[in-house]
Length: 255
Length: 219
Image (cartoon, rainbow over all chains, first blue to last red; front, side, top):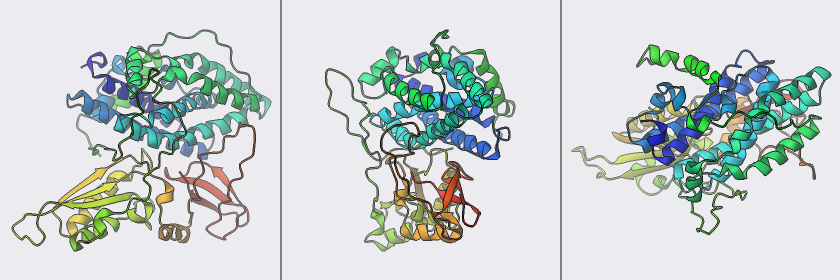
């Protein structure tokens, strides 16, 4: 069953679950490779929170779909075109400042989104959001502290932090795009309408950038929004190949 | 396989209006329902035994705390069966637990340990249910648990504030309470990292005795 024929709530849970899963996989790439040991631990912990959100959301998507797919089936046996995450989470880590720019942009969005989702009439989505708001608050704070330190640090750290912002900026717009599926779920009080989050997001991000002596990037080229429909950048395929390889090569393997 | 989290609380749908702004963020406190009493602990001796067995399970990551100390154990209930029936008509014990963090890797070990402990107390039918809502908060940690943490060398969670202090907002400066060093007791300490050796801890250092220590994050 492809995402387009799934019940709307299952598709929505899969979208949010894929955001968390893919970013968890990306952040895991920093473990033992971050600028300092505390950062290995911090990014690993953030990834763990995201993985926890993903497990509940993918399990729920499988249940609502009703075709017997488990969280593992959905995480490891779907191909690139069936993943419904935003482009921003699949982009490569690159420089540490690029990763931190993504953390600021995505966690600010995710916090605002979950703050609304806690009121969802869907009990599972509201339950996930109730835990996520506490966790993502820490993720946003972590990113904020780094943006301040790097932006208002040395000439070199300022230059690289500004470059990190510019690198991730084209993928910001997609976070606020809604389609008919999410609009319908939002009017049923199930989903958060992300198109309403932009002013709040701008206010927070702008205040951090101002304090960090960084410039808000200009809106220039923006790739077409496609993540929610399974249209991805080249980076996702490589990420999935690494993430899914073990499960597919050794079906049924356990620890 | 993970048991399905089934939130216990029913969110109240906002009355419909012309403008579907039902999920407008209103700074609602999502931790309502804190301090649920273990219903099964009252009355019946069998229920008390089942509760005591579940409550004895230790957190594998902080093995001086029981899951009751942590507030991870929510409710224990007994249903069906007849007390003293030797023909196998056993009651079903349902133990409800809630994770500290979404991705807490200790949950599966805790659930397995709960089942083992309740079975060892003489109950053959055990169901361990995981709920996400209301979301766990460090406010549910018992006083006893806080003392055990200090003895173990971990600074207990402070009273919960409304989240991390936003660094880039203007207006009044929020004063945060100091975390006391669990080694020497000095309040002169600083945070090294907001994240530590497990999901629930942050890494701090005492300025007075120079020792690093874990702080149980308040959420």
